[in-house]
Length: 405
Image: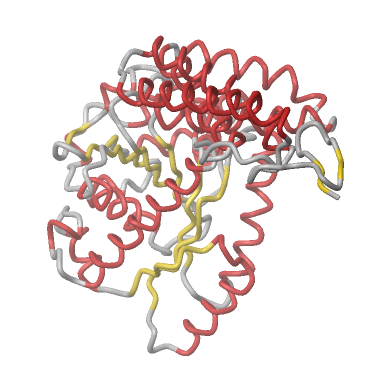
């Protein structure tokens, strides 16, 4: 027995066309489907060729409305358009919203923050959880358009390659045409020295910025067209005593970086401790990279650090995420290094970058000359490893943004 896909009429001698429609339905339904398809294709062409936001928005609305019309035929099993109506709805809803977000990003960002604060106390409600997830997605997109991506390089253990990684990951990003700001947040000022900046000659450092004596832009030293530094000096040692008196001081760096423009990435070199300076970095950062030397106690130490990060996410910075863990100072000839790295990969899985930074004397030599590895010896293993790490980081960012796209 034959059955029409649209009107559900049944009959042994019912005549159906290739689309499964009876004689009384076929002309009406096919005309309606074809009309919607023509209008959708017209609007896609206009939106694709226009740079006018209002025109793009108007045709996005038209595409979405017509796609919803086609969905009722799709649900009946009738062929409609390629891509499917559901795909068009998602794509052009996002494009429509982006025209608004890009036009008034500050207002959208402010409204999202207000909504997030209002919803957070009732986040256990399933619908609220979904809404907060959507807010996070839009905020991630906004951050990529409006503000630099702020990444803190952190490990409370010293000598694991934090400063070397901050300098050379930043330099690799600059080599790939990204504008990068490095912040030396360690009182030892190793990054400042490693970038060839004389600590004694500094008039402004990160300490003055945290104190509110100058704005962030006044402390920036431009090393080249794409790479800049906010240096540190010995005065930052006073921060632990001065700033620990008031709990609100954990947001000093975040407040200092508000409104910073002109950079794609900000990389923060954290001190080897979990004091007020590191808390400031965790409060300001969107993402963390953890350099980790493949040694026996590394895995035990990283678990403690994860506990601290979880606490910060609950109490200070809900949007903080771990971008990845870098294996540093790796020597494939050492059995211990191979075994520990294998255990770390087994335990932490996707949290660890595929690229490892091999032990390379040129990296230490470059810092002693105040140069990045790409200035000092661009064809060595160190330069190759940091460039591969940089490309892996950019690939992770692309994959993340495609989730909202």
